[in-house]
Length: 445
Image (cartoon, rainbow, N blue to C red; front, side):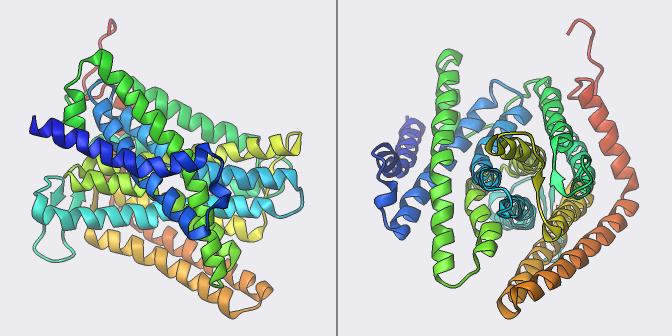
């Protein structure tokens, strides 16, 4: 009874956070709000929606494979990033030659690097910190400050394999498979979207694992019968998805406007502040899972998010651009954005070399965070201290230098962990055969 009262109260509080935005959106009065008030109202809705989404995904684990539930969570949590980036791609197609393609690529690469540089590293550090009080078994606590590590579930082998394939392809994107020019084209769409569709097909065939012991709202909702539980989960997904899709864009653009008013360059805001706002539901959800000592689920969701952003997000930009253009066309971008894509792919490569042994240590998390912040701060200094032309040239050099650094570090780790890479391939092969536990699937299953 106490758990029921607590759970109903928690659901009510989360819903209350969202109601001001629903009222503003339903009456069409978003534009009448001041920028600060718009950020507060939309941000509150994003916060409430993030908890509703997390509860829905945890509850769904009783009825569908956990990997699929987390993949749905990941898609909904990063849906705002799709919306924001699609807007830039559409504007590029509606105004050819305006350089809108550069903004779309900047936003996409910024979002992907934030997810690893802040998301993966930050959640790993938070997990290790929380384990001191939560006793999370997914964390190995070492003797020294930097010797602790997060242990990852070997079930993410499939995600690692698909993410590796997408990362390899991303290095080729700036060369343009069609027409010889820089641009995201239909070949990129077919390969990257095809990878994600194949991934979903693989994980949906998995068995429904015995659900982890849940507490709070998910435990309460899982107590309902299947006929009521499934509509509740779908309702939470739909409502939280609606909130995230409608509220994050005003939230992001509001933060962007505040930043520009303080003298921060618009391009820098588009690449970093707007994606940070649109990634906030994902970061909130994963921090919530860590707080419940569900570090494994948290990292599974983060990795799934990176996979869908690194495939669906890139692959669908050419579709949006072509619709706005009124005919097929590759989304064009300049030399600097080509370097941004290479750096994003190199960061992904280095992050995969860390995860290949199903562990991320505090040292590795700190390195990920420091490298990410160093590059962003370095580029900001260049933008603020040089002319536009000089800053762009220096930025390209900086991006290529960090790309080289990530690749050297990644190649070194992969060389040391070659046996781990073979293990990932073996585990993924079993998943492809539909053997979630490593046993052979019977022909009549």
